[in-house]
Structure formats: structure tokens, C-alpha cells
Amino acid sequence: MNLLVIGSGGREHAIIRKLKENKNVEKIYCLPGNGGIAEDAECFPIGATDIEKQIAFANEHSIDYVVVTPDDPLALGAVDAFNKAGYKCFGPEKKAAIIEASKAFSKDLMKKYNIPTAEYEVFSDEEKAHAYIDKMGAPIVIKADGLALGKGVIIAETVEEAKTAVSEMLNDGKFGDAGKTIVIEEFLTGPEVSILTFTDGKTLKPMISSMDHKRAHDNDEGLNTGGMGAIAPNPYYTKEIAEEAMNTIFVPTIRAMEAEGRTFKGCLYFSLMLTEKGPKVIEYNSRFGDPETQVVLPLMETDLLEAMMATTDGTLDKCDVRFSDKSSCCVVIASLGYPLSYQKGFEIKMSEAAHKATYVAGAAIKDGKLVNSGGRVLGVTAVADTLKEAITDSYKLVSEIDFDGSFYRKDIGQRALKALED
Ligand code: AMP
Ligand code: GLY
Image (cartoon, rainbow, N blue to C red; front, side, top):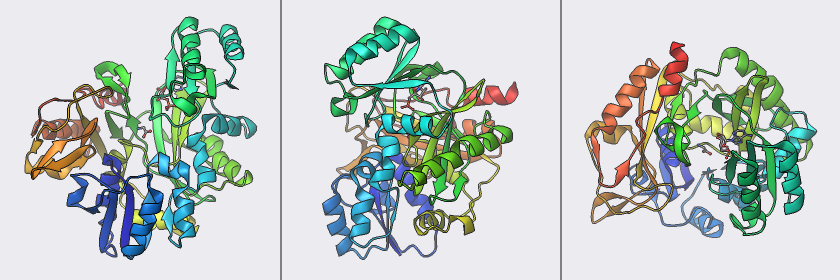
């Protein structure tokens, strides 16, 4: 089979490496891919949202199956377009991808179907939003409705801060159209868990749980990022909580989407907060998470392509999806300054062992050398019998990687380790 993967991150690199384990896979193409992915797939410079060109590319390269993972092409209807052109495709259609693309939609869905989430209201009027903030007090959470590269969430510590965030989104056009409608919601506390699931719209099979590390610096300080590292499994996510989440959140969500005529197929990713009142949804994503995918897929014992195709074909109930009982840790090495501005073009050197363990997110080939070209550059993943060993092993590999103008968090997995020891 010839596969076409759309995207260019560490997530796509992890997916491609896993897809290659399937014996029926002859060739994998990636659009646009990156300098590291190019070792595992043939990459061409067609952008992730350039859907027309992607379809023309598929027509020229005898593609049998397409995998779309980034949020923006999904929200634009890439899967619908590929299906229309006669291609089988992994991922939700546009009408289902809205579960991530509009927070107002997803919050209203949860309210309508009694799926546990933070209390909220939707606003596009500044005065009404300010009145709601006065009523609710702080801390309070302001979210841009649309896709905002993971930056559209403001946790306001004071009423003043909350009102400023509202005005910036509604009046000053911060986040553009994505911020013209906003969700204001209750501030929740508790450990966070990422659960990626396969679903064909009727059956849902969760992957192993994981924990992201969203802030840029140690001890969860600094700005929010796409994710600076991850571990799996997440020790806070016990069997009892998993069962509760399945019954109160996962199944009700796919049933709700079906009832709305928006059957979701693909990877539905639940970002949960384990509150004192049980697990609640922080947000839905219509795709694999990054860096979570980089710790989840290395623990997958069964075939990824078969699971993906089962979501497309509606046969997930018959598909074996299993994970090992080992642990994994991924440390992201980023360009200094990320998530704000940073310098590009520094050569990346790594040992053979580090090279094998690394998923490449933001790097390009320049004059025959691998150089950093994005904010998040590398995801260094180790798998071991225990979380402690996985952490030690991944940091050892990180020490075998060298490039100027880089940084990484030193405490990936420490919170999880502490939870295991307590
Ligand atoms: P999101 O992009 O919706 O996943 O939000 C980004 C981060 O903001 C989450 O990972 C949480 O740490 C935090 N967050 C979002 N919503 C809430 C909430 N209602 N209460 C507390 N923290 C939140
Ligand atoms: N790691 C968070 C995300 O993929 O959205």
C-alpha cells in the first residue's frame, strides 16, 4: 500500500514510524513533512492546508490511504475533499472536526448531553461578558472560540485581567476571527490527563493515558506551548477513573455527535481534568495530540494502520487495540525563545542512539545538515519497564544531542513520578 500523511510535526513522525511496521506498507509520502521525517517518508513541499494540491499529488502517486492529523486541514474539510476525490482517509469530516474547531460548539454539546465540563457561557458582546465576569469572580478562564494554535486560552487570576482578555479578543481582534466569539468558564483544579481514542463513530477504543507538560519552563512556569514533553501512562488515571470517563464522557460524546448528525471517525482526543467531583472535559481535539502521540504510539502493541482503517471502515469493534504495560517519556527540545521568537538554522548533532529515539518536529536539511527550523524541534522518547527508568533514559539521550540556541525542560515526568511515590 502507498500511504499519504499530511502534516509536519513530531506527531506525524511518530505516526509514520509506527505505520512503517505494517508489512503491507510499501511507500509513505508526507506533505510537507520535514528534514527528519524525510528519513522515513518521501516529503514534498505542499502545505498541510493546501488541499487541492494534496489531492493532485495523491492522483499522481497511486495513494491507497490518506492520514490527516493537523487540526487546520481537518477543520477546513480535508477529509471530505479526499473522500469526494475517491480516497479513503483517516480523520473526521469537517462537520465532526468542529468539536475542536469551535469551543462554543463543544461546550453547547456537553451541556445538551450532560457531559461533565466546567460551567460556562458563550459571548460576543463585551458588556455582557464583563457582567458575567463580575458575577462569577476570579480566577476565571477566557477561551477564544476558534483554533488559535493553543494560545487562545487565558487563565485570569483577577477580574481585571479577565476583562482585559475579553476586550482584547472581542474588540482588538487578538486571535482574529477565532476570538470574535468567546467562552468564559469556571476555573477547575486537579491533575490533567490526555486520552487519545480511536473511534469509528459507534465503537470507541481508548489508547493508553498520557500527561502533557504545556508550560515552557520547569515547575509549570512560563508561557503555554504546544507541549514540552509527555509521559505515559498517566498515574492519576486509575482503572476506576477510566471506567467513569468511559461511561460519563467518552461514550456519551460519540453518541451525542451521532445524534447531531456529526458522526466522528478518527482519533478523538479528550483533555480531562480530574476534579474532586470526577473527571471533566477541558477540551476535545479532533486529532492525535502532540507530544502525546510520541509517548503513546511507542507503547502500542497492535497495528496502527489496521486501527486507523477500522475507524474509516466502521469495523473498530473487530479490531484488536492493545498497549504494553511499560512506560514512556518524551522530552521536547525547543529553539530558545519558543513559544515567542527564536533563531533558526543551527546545526543539530546527535549520537546514533539519540537519532533512533528522536521524532523530528521542526528541523530542515540545509547544506546536507539537519538544522532547527521551528519552535519545537525534537521529541526524544524512551520506553522502559518503569516511568523512572524511561525518564532517566530519555534525559540520557537528550544529553547526546547538541545544538546551539536550544532549551528543554528538566522536569518532564517528575509530577507523575511523585504521584506514583505518594
Ligand atoms: P485548552 O487549550 O482548552 O486545552 O487549555 C489549555 C490549558 O489551560 C489546559 O491544559 C489547562 O491547563 C488550562 N485550562 C483550560 N480550561 C481550564 C479550566 N476551565 N480550568 C482550569 N484550567 C483550565
Ligand atoms: N499537546 C496538546 C495538543 O496536542 O493539543
